[in-house]
Length: 115
Image 1 (cartoon, rainbow, N blue to C red):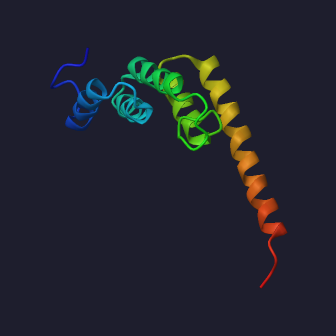
Image 2: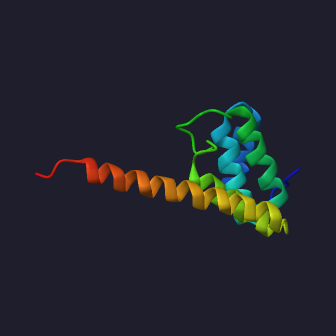
């Protein structure tokens, strides 16, 4: 468990929120990000996994498997946790989603009428 003094007050607030609202995936995601920034990679990965389990199909969520930022954060957490194969897999997913998003934006721009 996280003890006071080991982490920042913002993270402590997220831990308190998590206890009050354990079913809100964005709290787990935010806590995972905060823990990752503080070098608590294993805990960060646990929070990311919990967030995904709570919201596996939420396309609008940053937790969505189709959200490139999430995969980048997960890759960073895996790399810091010395799990290079998992980090590589997440970076490949991130790159694929980013390319798809860029291609979609280019296609949308090409289809838009000029004014």
